[in-house]
Length: 339
Image (cartoon, one colour):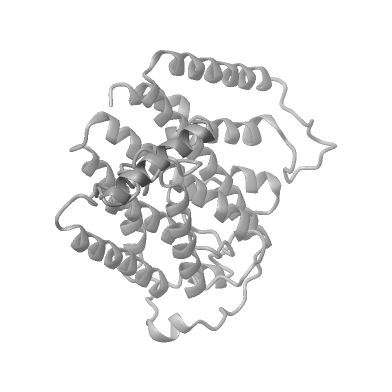
């Protein structure tokens, strides 16, 4: 913690730098016409550039001083923050393109009754999704530093990939939002231009009032991916099967409350679970899938202990000349015939 905390201020600077640029430096996309306002506010631009250069310098200085494993955690934290900013902009674009209409037919809506607008159960799905990383961090306190850093790196990588995949899909098809605030003209206030799209960063801090960003569900993907990382830490535990069942029930409960609150269609939740599981099993150990704890690590070579059979050649023998290999096989065959 003492190593990570000094690096967090620079790691989370990107949304602030982005917001200040579009809110106070660049006037592109504002409601005012370009004839009345210059493209840049030149009084603030030098200060913004100085801020950006200072953040880059401090970031590089920090990574040059801390241990490699801590540096990797902070780098993936930066990747996580940038991916969160990307998916937030994509959600704002969806709200800008969204057209309020009657929700589509959904089998889950027919099975699960809808919550009222003022129901106290509406925030339950958000609480379940946001509370799971806290459980993951508390569980990591009982690990060594190496295991803890590895867990954080894997979790940040997987969540960032899920965010990037969601940013690529939500803007492709705009569906009528089933949430109550998406169908009420009094409560639906979409962005009115690029400037508003770039500066509305509410979804990054829990203000989920966007519409149209449906396929696939970010809450479900976030919860599923975090739960898979948490379950993996118990794989050597005797009650691993019970932990898996409890994890599946946790994700199912969150998805049920999301459907009951009409925050997503059933297809959004199903696709989110599928994408999360496939992403986890492909990238859980790194970008290439090769790691010291992958499925094939630690296996013993296929060598027979029986003396009445021919031994399989080792890797060293396979690289030897053919004559040497043949002579060894011949001697082994003679020994077998004598037996």
